[in-house]
Length: 399
Image (tube, rainbow, N blue to C red; front, side):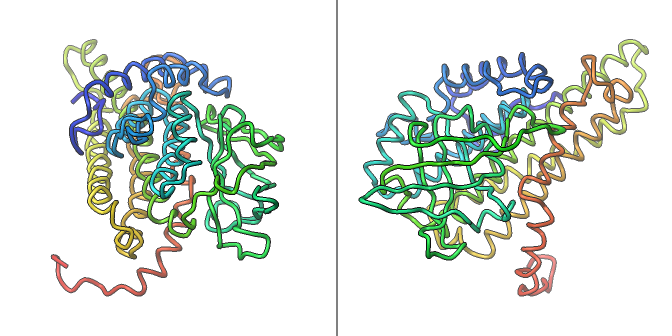
């Protein structure tokens, strides 16, 4: 079996021209992936290609200068980039999550429409700032509040992580609605680079995903009131932020897993050529990797289809059933991706364990280890436990 190079084969047909652009971009990302990782630097060359192939605005409606691509097409780009350079894929996925939040919740705002037009015309890259201070990974709680004066707003927040913040053209951030608002009474605000100043607080020296450059910053921003997305974040979070994040991040992790399987396959074939067709001991682990990858792709494809069926129904998206499903998907996909990569490394034996050589799976393993702790799986499962306590135990196998 060849390591799959497309995800949407399980979710629909990708537009050929878009797929061609994505593959060309992925080829550039792959060429520089090792340097990006070794130097812990932003994938400059990959994002020059992303912008040259006009991939940043593909989800924006055609009326605003975009291509009107759906989430399945965006997931496929994430998957292709994830196979080539995990940091590039993750940055691209996080950008598209922010774009989706603006598109789906701007309610005809002229200011936000202008920002989207500018994004498409100039291929702007949007960063995400949802992690803050003591709250850590609790994105449904904000410490910093929006201040209002004479039709203008200002915000100062201590962001423990802003991925690729120094390299972005804008930032989309959560904040308390006002100084007297509760921590969970949040808004989502869009600031362009001319609106804010970042002061670096801490660096990003990690096992993997090193090219995301997820440094910590103090963010000082100001802008027009109309730069606040009009819908409350309590609606944006379950209807768009959570499903887009879990599905697009999951596509990147699945791409990493597919890349590892591809290397394991090449290793097994190499050994067989040298041993007159005899399978090496690692062939059993290769089988495990392939079958787990098929399961992983199936889980992700099924969740994509469910979201696509319900994405126009706010009530369905906010339901306990959907939120349980989409959060469980994140846990399953992240854990399965880890299993696939580990099996692929074991299939390659010492050649996979090495940090050099064409069969090394060292970088894929370090990158995929981030998956269970991006919004920690334990946090998700603990939150789901309360909901599951309220649900009846199925009475039959078909329930």
